[in-house]
Length: 433
Ligand code: CTP
Image (cartoon, rainbow, N blue to C red; front, side, top):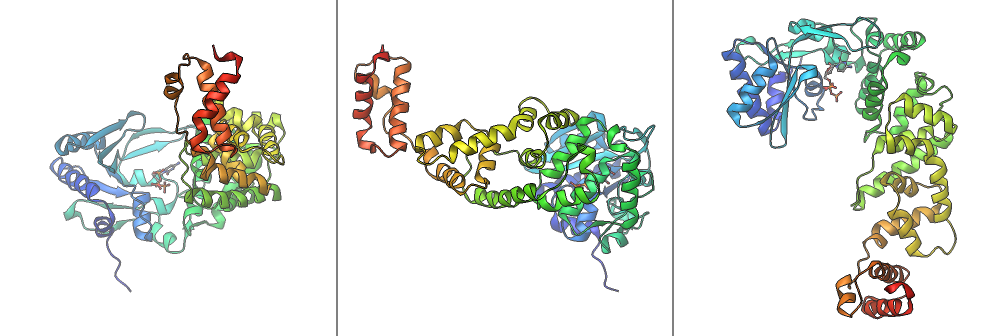
């Protein structure tokens, strides 16, 4: 059989220089405190499957936060503790490593956060979601380099199988169902057929209804905030009957599929454009499309169910109606470019992306033209030039500049004519003082 490269070696090959510094400091600190220290979870899974993305979790059988604080002080690294979870992060430049103390968990009721206490590594692995995430490797050099794999994670990883550790796993923590879909979407892993049955059992027991809005939203955000194919994710949500758990009549139809297809093209186009305004919130865009076929009251209900706040809730609730209005105005024949600029400047980044994915070719064209040309049209003159001509300061100066910009956008004047146009505008208006 082919010899496997030990995880600790893979880690040193793939971690950043900053992470290796933190790692070395952590190992000597843990050794001097006689505290066993391990690399665990997603990092082990990803190192073994060749997809290490840089997130590194260490677990100590002892106070992990204390060790993290100690080495951050020695290295002059940044330290932040997350008290609620008993975890800490040490960062050097862009590199970071997460620390936690091994813990055991018990669930007093379905879908609530567990009670947590100190535990051994074995207990820490046993509280995890999937066997592929329940592997560890000791970082003490004299401890050997074998994989600690009490749930056959290695063999599940080799067969690309997501297997839970016990039958009540999804009842204890229904967010694991959404985590499974996220893992499926970014790797070759697939839920085993027994695990799919357990998903069905958990749904039949209504576990999602017991989950807090914040936890459900946070998981949906992570699931939808993905560069992976949203179509595959929503298809899987539908296959596993998860959509009605979000809202009773929610379904995946060809309308949403077409939207997602156009959004995929818009996303590629945007990557090649320079989207200088606030970056769009992708999970919200995808949720918007998914829920756009629902009645208004259902959209309001879902935003509430997911504890989505203020502007984002309003976007979901009133978005489709507003969107169709914007789309129809942008689709009006002979629309002057300055009006396009006004509409798109006042729109949210998410609305601009949705318009770029409109089913109407003319609308898509306008958004592209706005992104590439219109929005960056700058004037050669400023308010100072108008004041220098003897005009009093006041709102009319801004209005004159707006009129000049509109004339430039509409192609009515060239740069050289800006000053003359502004002066004519001010001279012809009675509101200038
Ligand atoms: N975990 C869990 N149940 C959850 C959340 C997390 O068992 N509901 C465990 C998993 O073992 C996971 C580890 O905690 O590997 C760390 O969680 P996280 O960083 O969210 O996941 P990773 O697998 O490390 O990374 P990702 O999912 O982003 O690939």
